[in-house]
Every structure is written in structure tokens, then in C-alpha cells.
Image 1 (cartoon, rainbow over the protein chains, first blue to last red):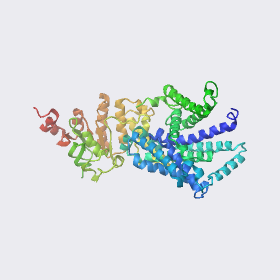
Image 2 (tube, rainbow over the protein chains, first blue to last red):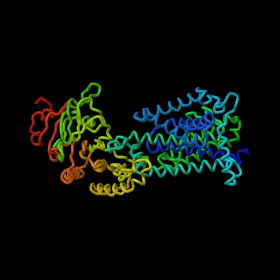
Image 3 (tube, chains in turn brown, red):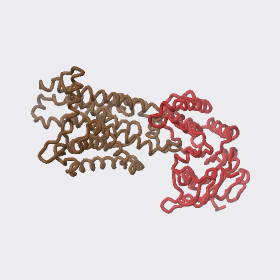
Image 4 (spheres, rainbow over the protein chains, first blue to last red):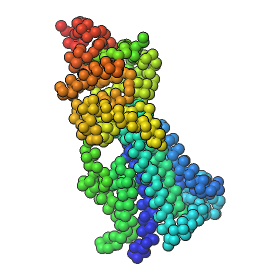
Length: 321
Length: 251
């Protein structure tokens, strides 16, 4: 209990919330602005994380080259997914995206030579050698810790993740306020209307999908760096639905709703670990971990009843057709 | 001078039912052409074929002599053929002004990262959008969400949004449907004035025959997917085939 109440634990919760902010920001752009029903966001996170780890371990590239390339890889995957599937109706597109994310996970599980298979990134290198992809990152983290006179590496990570998150939030916030963002919102409202006014709907949807995928790729990088090791099991479809919860909790079509939703989600997710009292203490800790999912479910239901537009959403927009 | 719009032998079938079955017509520049016909005559399908929302299975569509029947809707719109829809396609959760601004053509700000380059175009577009909203008396609601407008106001918004693109040919799909008398008069005045002052060309599907006969320079009558009559309003009114099409052949 004391360990949980320590600064280190909350720094960890903050880092996770920051990673989820970046991850969900991509979904907010795709669904909240362009209306794309993407249920496969986690795939782009996996592609970002794996591309970076593979380039660093197998190709011996610098982290600072591998990381941006991994983000580009996630965006390219978005374009490749979108080209054949974005012409589908919204609900069919949703099915394709969830299938895509499962395909990515299964490929990562089974392509042992490329990804290390189900053993995860530890098996990326030579046999009998535990592969590491974050030596350069850890040095950078220590450097940041030293420069900012922080007491822990966790605090340094917290500062880095949230700095990047705030920069990305600001960039997306600026982008959606331009005429470009106006076209995205028009496509969300009615894509036939947008097409009838000369807007290339497919091109804009591809841009939104690719940019959202790139953001998930960035989240994947931080995920990889935070946990030193990851495996295909880390990229279950559940993560995509966490992003959906965050976006709906915060409010659709509102950029600054994303960190609010992510912070609440992170707090609920981690905070339910404190439910260590009767009668809950009669459950073992693994079972109690599921209680948090129940709590989050109840919060979502309560929100839908009391505030369907999300915390920062506008109700008058919800009731319009 | 060639026709603004030429439709030649266009065919479109749904599961074997030939909704448009070899329709041929043309629309001259600076004219108002009314397209009438009973329900199921194929008018809406023809509109969709011409505006690219359906691909004709046979035949050609030419805009100022240029083939457009293989193009996607947005490219046809950019070429200057812009349509409205029977039920207005209001972008409900955007403001009235944004609805109109969206229609600005050739806007560099609509490219990702083009916001700075597009600032001048955005200023021009705003000025023009306010002008258009003033014209149809929606300026007072410019900053309201478009979803709060009434049915008739939505029709007017759709109309000025189409105008905002700077079209050569406007296809209006039942502009009078579900519109109150005051807006009807206003709409008719706008259409006549725009043809007169700006040389706009209109092709209008409308069930309100009184409106069609008063507004149109030419009237085209469709039934069973084909054009059966084409002429001045008074000629068409007197055409026995037209009377047959509307009343059936029993008499």
C-alpha cells in the first residue's frame, strides 16, 4: 500500500496516461473529426513499437533514426489499410480495422524470425541473448533527469511523455481549426455532401487515418521505452477500446478532452488497485484487477446516462441531426 | 455553341430494372431547364448519373463538350457541375457560415499544413459567404449550428452552398419540396436573378409543375427512364404524351 502511494507509482500512472493521451489523440482525429470508425488503432501502436525495436536490435540503427521511421511505418500502414477499405461503408470499415489489428498481432506472434514471436522482443537478437532496444533511450532519459534535477527516471519519463503529448495536442488542435479541419468535419457530418462540393473524400480520410496511425506509432514508441520489453500480447484489441473509452469520456470532437479522458481513465485504472478493503480484499489481487474494468464500465454507463456528450463535449451538438 | 450539358443514351439499371433507359437530353448555357415526370420516371437516378454519384452503365455525359461520366463526384463538382439533394444535406454540427465556407473552391488552406498559404483565400471566401447568406436572409444565423435551421432554411443553405462553389451548371433536386410559400417565392426570384445577372445555367427536377412552367425556358419530360418530350413550357403542356404519362393511358 505504501509503495502504491509513493511518488514513483503516480509517476508511472502519469506516464501511462500520457501514452494513452497520444494513442487516443489519433483516434479522436480519426473518429471525432473525420468520423472514421477505427477499431484497430492498437495495430498502429504495435507497428510503431516493433518497427523501432527491430531496426535498433536487428539492423543496429540509432534510436533517433529508427524512432521517426517507425512512426512513418505506422502512417504508411494506415494508408495501406485505408486504400482498399475506406471506400466501404462505415460499419464494414470498422470490421476491416479490427480484423487488421488482429492480423498484425498474429503475424507478430508467429513471424518468429522478424519479431521474436510470442516470446516478445527479448528474442529479437541472437539465440540465448536477451535483446535490448533501449540503451540509447535510457541514456537520453538519464540526461533529461540530470538536466531537470529530477529525483527519478520515472519523473524524467513523465516529463518527456507529457512534453511530447502537449506538443502533439497543440499541433492537432491547430490543424483541426484550419480549413483542412473543416473539410474533415464536413466528411464526418455527410461525406456525400462534401463530395458534391468538390472535396476528395477518400484523400482526406486517408490523411486522417494515416495521421492518427502515426500518433498511435508515437504512443507505441513510448510504450516500448517505458516497459523495456514487449510481446504481441501487449497489443490486444482491448487497448483500442480503452482509447474509445477515453475519447468518449472526454468528449468527441474536442482535442483537449483527450488528456482529460486519459487522466480520468488512468486514475480509475490504477486507482482501483487501492480497493484493498472488505469485502473486496477477500478477492485475490488478480481478481481485483478485474474490478477496475467493472468500475470503468459503470463510469461509462453513468456518463452515457448523465452526460452523453462526454466531460468536455457540447450537449447542443449531440441532439442535432 | 455547344450545349452546357449533354446526356446521350444514358442507361442505369438496378438489379435488372432499368431506372434510366437510354435518356438523351441537353441543356443550353444561361437557361433554366425543368425536368419533370411521374414518380419512378428515373429523374433522380439520372441526376445521380450526371453528378457522378452513380456510374452510367452505358451512354455519355458531357459538360461543355468534356466527358465526365467516368469521373468521381468531387471531380465533376470541381469541373463546375454542382448539385443539391432532395433532402438538404446540412452539415448539422457545423455553423451555417462553415457550411458555406466549406464550398469555397481552390482553397489552399484545405491542404494539410496550408493554413498560412490559405489565409487570403479564407478572407475572400468569408466575404463571399456573408454576401450569399445575406442574399437568402440567413446572415443572422451565420454563427448558429446549421442543425438548428428549419427545413426551408436548410434548402436555402444548400442552395447558397452550391452557389459558393462558383458553378457553371447547377442541378437542383426538388428545390421546392417541403418549403413554405415565402421561401418558394424567394427561391424562384433567386434562380431567375442568377440566370439573368451571372449567366448561371440550371437543371431543375421539380414536382411543383406551376413552378416549373413559370421558371423554365425549356421543360424536359421523363417517364420509364426515357425522355418523352422536350420543348417550351407551353408546348410541353399541350403535348398529349405528357398528359398520358401523368394521367395514365386510360382516358
